[in-house]
Image (tube, rainbow, N blue to C red):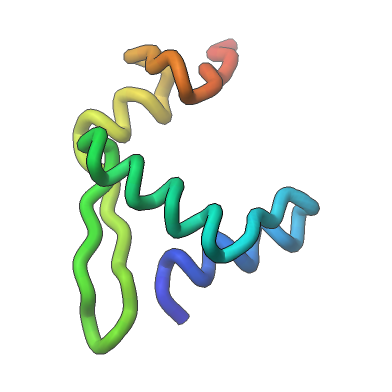
Length: 72
């Protein structure tokens, strides 16, 4: 199972499952913005966080279209 399929399955399990098309579009946007890098390996899309993506995920940097998590 590729990373994008794993994320899709996980989000569906917790009740936040987007459509495959929506998830693909989101991953494409995250990659265009420089927050992730993807590559094809054995026909699977492998997703890797970039330093910029990690900084957003850890709420060190804010982006207007990504909800900021609360840091406690």
